[in-house]
Amino acid sequence: MTLYFIHRGQCRKGKQMTFEGKVALLTGSGRGIAKEAALQMAAQGAAIVLNDIVEERLRQAEADVKATGADVLAVNADVTKPQQVQEMVARAVHIFGSVDILVNSAGGSLQTPRFLEEISEEDWARVVDFNLGSQFRCTKAVVPFMKKKGWGRIVNIASSAGTHGEPLAWSPAYSAAKAGVLGFTRQIAIELGRHGITCNAISQGDTETERSHELWAEGLWPETEEEIRERYKHHPIPRMARPAEVAAVITFLCSSEASYINAENIMVTGGAFISP
Image 1 (tube, helix red, strand yellow):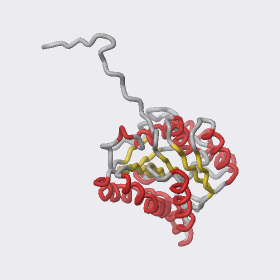
Image 2 (cartoon, rainbow, N blue to C red):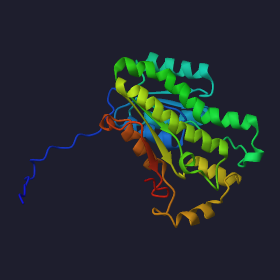
Image 3 (cartoon, rainbow, N blue to C red):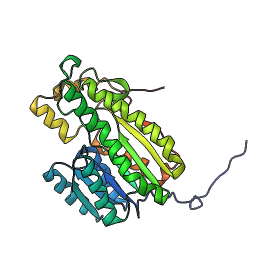
Image 4 (cartoon, helix red, strand yellow):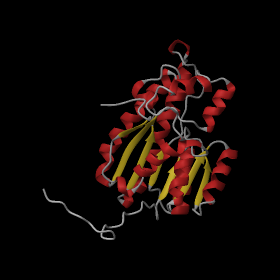
């Protein structure tokens, strides 16, 4: 057996992840996970395009990103409206020259009924369009600019509801839409990889965000805060995820260092859901 010793100072210093020269568009980034990812990328040099439909939180997110020293554009746009998506991307390209990174984070259950027999056709269509249709719309709008540069990163926010279902929380419409996100992610990853564009998904478990606390306060989450914390005591990591922890995975997938990760679904659940 041969042993090799490297003296201190002989190791090459690890390359720091950087987003210098990159433009990142994150939908639903007025708060929560996407806002945290925006802050992380901004701190590493990215120009940031924020998006939300609630003006107050969009402006607060804009101020927080500006505080990092990054260039930022905040766009109030509804990602279920094709024209608004096109206008948002056009503004980003006009100001920054391109869109290199897309994080499709806008989504949610829209407080629709949880049970199959209670869901209307309209409920189903709204939830599927908000969670899946919006990702199609935004991706289609930015891909031509990524192709032109021969480089791009797309991260689609899915959910453990789309991989395992959610017996306590969300509706069949939400779970079906998030499962659709995974199929969409894989197919466009196959299509776009040859153009230097990677596409991956994140399936996070329960994450303690501002929205979580709103739902608990309004009695709209099937479990109380105390009940969910009690349930998590039996998980491998006995707590809910923090937004910054999920955002860190998104940030890595958006980096140049993740150049050979494509068509993957990364489970960020603290071991609550274990895939083979």
